[in-house]
Image (cartoon, rainbow, N blue to C red):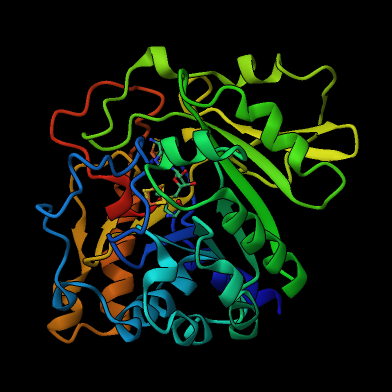
Length: 334
Ligand code: SAM
Ligand code: SF4
Ligand code: SF4
């Protein structure tokens, strides 16, 4: 047992800032059934936009092969995301292929959650984060540029809870759009076990017209509540600052005002099979070509070890010096 632990510790990979590779976010598709203004603005992601053809997207077998190869490097968590992961056909088959010792989570806009929650749990999903930027229909539809209704997402959240999933809600807050959602979304989940995380509007990608004036900081959001008691982090690298509000846990993800790069253990695989070591990267490392040239599991593990050991990303801490175009969040996986 002791010897096994030593072997594991030797295999675990660390980057140049001594950060492990603990989390892998997998973008299952670059497509989405919403056009959130801060993520896939319609003027850029309309009929003209070239989404990936099926042949360029990694198959479930290819993705599972990569995941298996990364487990010995220290991988503990998988998050399925996109684009909208529930648009990917037979996603249950993929979840069932993942090693059961990993913590398996999904981020979804919730529109297709109600009908799929039970099957997701049966396949092995542990947790779900549902994005919900407003509970009032006008703001919801304006933020996400959709005709869908917040009730659909709320029903999805309830179905997920009843199916046994741990549920968090993500609310992106953008000045001039949904400041009022901070209180309203939090209030909607008082008395339930759903944890709400408020996210500062981030400068991901190149299309969302980000500017600093539209950022409501975590501090400003906290000031909207009467009384909050700070909670300690659940684990090293936890991105949200947690607070207790009455009987409810809420949290703030402050990537702009309080960057958390120093503990960032997240890698991402884009829908077309490139490994990205930072959300704000401009170029990934092509694993798909390796896979399609019959790379072995050891080859993939060795390639990722080399990539990770040379990783020095800390974009949020040194914001503003990316010279090339940043990859879109819907492509790389949020
Ligand atoms: N479609 C799914 C969803 O919306 O939950 C998964 C993918 S989405 C890219 C993942 C998360 O990224 C969502 O919670 C979304 O709100 C967040 N997000 C997207 N663009 C963002 C931005 N510019 N700033 C902050 N969060 C953003
Ligand atoms: Fe789609 Fe999610 Fe991006 Fe909204 S945040 S456009 S739901 S991928
Ligand atoms: Fe991690 Fe990059 Fe975000 Fe920093 S900016 S927390 S390194 S993904």
